[in-house]
Length: 187
Image (cartoon, rainbow, N blue to C red; front, side, top):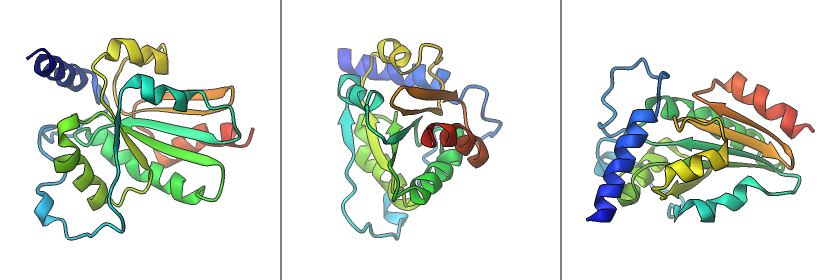
């Protein structure tokens, strides 16, 4: 019962803070982005793998000290601005696929919807970037660890290489993503 209440609170809190001020659409956030799994006619090339982790398991991706530029985007399938900007991250991932760049999409969807919502969404949208589901109800603990100024609204993006970093709260255009990414990548 305690876990169910915690997940309900998390969903309400994320919905309250998520997509704050960035969505002028009238689309209901509870409507699935992908209507039904059986309507998707795309066969995946390989089984879709999504790790479900808590923040302690995710934390090491924020402190790698190598020559890779990390682009970490927090999003959810029910967040309209998040879905709208995903093609920009996929384009960046494709364009820099032979470079030391790692695009990681951290989903804040409900853990029990991996197979029914998240995987069908990834398949329908042909998502090639790594997707990790963050299953950690202690958002008041982990949000400031990502960025102390982050309100918790999504989408949000953290870009870094070694000691250089930038944080973007809110949706981005492709040009805005590149203007934040390139100075760090080229350093």
